[in-house]
Amino acid sequence: MDSIGLALRSRKKQTVLYEQGFLVMQGEDAQIVRFEQVEAVYIKKLDVSYEGTSALTMLGGTLLGGVVGGALSSLASGRILLRYKINMRDGRVISSDFPEVGGRALEELTLREMPVLKDSYREGKDLQFGALLISKKGLESKKGILPWSELEAPTVDEQFRLVIKRQRSWLAWLQLLIEKIPNFPICFDLLTELQKTQGNL
Image (cartoon, helix red, strand yellow):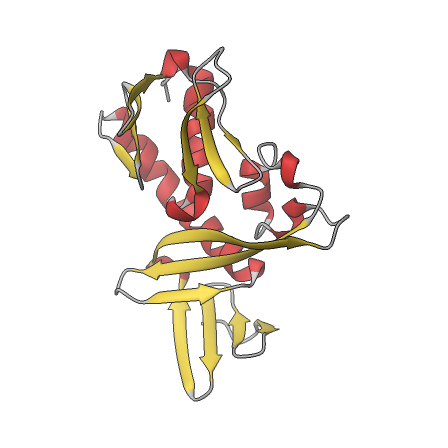
């Protein structure tokens, strides 16, 4: 781990962010986390307050803001507070309220996993994101299959849900809480690209 890091403090714990990971200290307990060990990140909205501050500034790094910035424009009237649940490959679960930590973990995860996921999709393999399945046929859930040719551009609503609609339909075909979707920025980025290309990568 690098010798110089960014120190972040809350009431109960201290986190030091490094280039390759971060250190979490709570009382006498200390955990070292390397980004290469991160398996999934879940994002939960805690609160919206401080009117006038853009929600996009709290999304955890330029990557997350860039990926879902357009979809979250409806949330820009307040400051959004997020909690990141970081699942490790060894079974540990680390919780952080620091966007610097959550955003960086998502950035490293995206750089590592996006090429792998795209290759898997091109090979005809299905991609699972919680209750949503991405396949060559389109989007699949308990509600059935929505073909790529009928999919409208995905959005995020004020309840912090992913909203999937069929073209020329006012009603949502599917609504999923973002906190239930692992690696949501990766999922959203894939959905957006596949919707534009009608399922081609």
